[in-house]
Length: 102
Image (tube, rainbow, N blue to C red):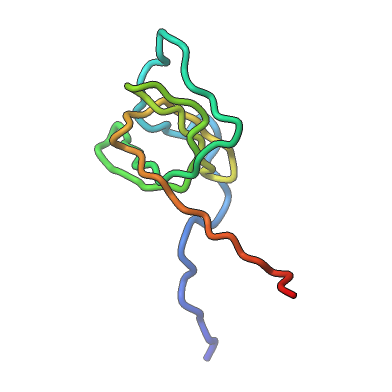
């Protein structure tokens, strides 16, 4: 009898073709200058899709205004970007590991 392993979490397989990719809902770009940091802060971004589903992804704030955040994340092995509402974003801490302790 073959041994089957438990499915791994996350997405597996061939990514959908670009014509089948459904982007999340997003805001129009701001009509005034945005803050663009030298180092983008890490975020949790709650994406909302046209069919009503939501997905929380690890991302980065590439720019922002008081009304919108330009978030970037990786989905289906491709960098994606969207202007989203600030309430869809939460700061994320990236732990610093000192691998070379003396």
